[in-house]
Length: 150
View 1 (cartoon, rainbow, N blue to C red):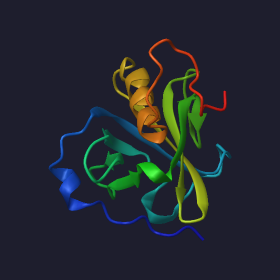
View 2: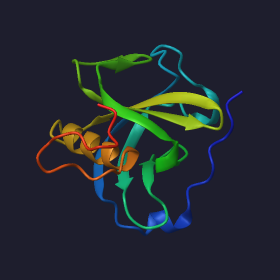
View 3: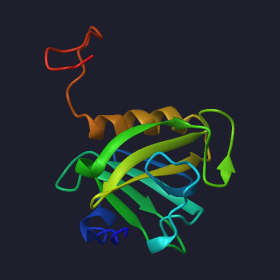
């Protein structure tokens, strides 16, 4: 089964996020299966949400604030990848219209997606998520670093 997410650290509610965006939490699916919606723990619920990326302090990660549904905090260490998607379980939009992230909850791999109200927030959210997933400093010349497998 899928374990319950840990409660949101209370300090995060007062912390200033690196980036915040309003929109729709579209839901969560198992692994890469875009149609296998997760029903437990409210993870699959579609709801209004504010997505906050926190890149400072003790609690680095992604905070999903959902009025009327359980808030969710995903620590940076549990985030696996982030990208743009055209759809997930019951919500399909234009290609790249959703910000999606892969993450681990215990031993289970999940994918969640968010549709920002403002299209310009998509790339900003994606860049901020990628920064906390792979915090290696970028080479200013744009070349891959020595430890970079590319």
